[in-house]
Length: 156
Image (cartoon, rainbow, N blue to C red; front, side, top):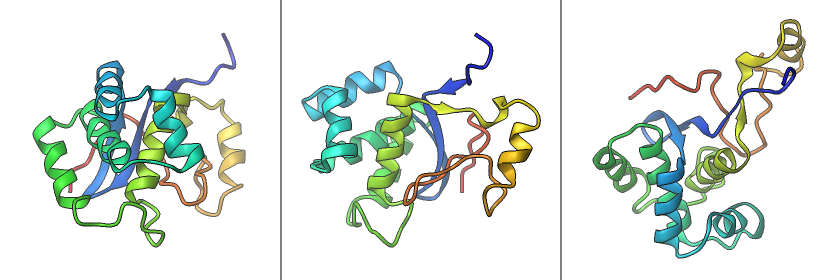
């Protein structure tokens, strides 16, 4: 399977108090579906395509994504209470707003995220010259960008 990129269903994003690893693993996906009352496909449709989301689609995607990324459930709940409750869900002035972050988490679970470190030598250097920040990844406009390392987590 040469040439196939290494794809992970997790993403490291700047959100809340720092950079966090988000992952919706099977256990978190099942809980998300139960809490939202619909399947993952419907949640993805509401968040990504139809833009007819419920607050729970965003909040529970974030909370469960933090848990799947390795954060204890109590800490994930604390972050939601601190950074989501009483704050705009989709503040257009904040590129790491809750909606954009939930969309990135759902996208990672659904489509995966290519590992930047898996690019053949030479290709990474050529791609680095394409962006203004030297990044080899191409973040979507208005979406949080992904870090080069998917395993490291830093707390603020």
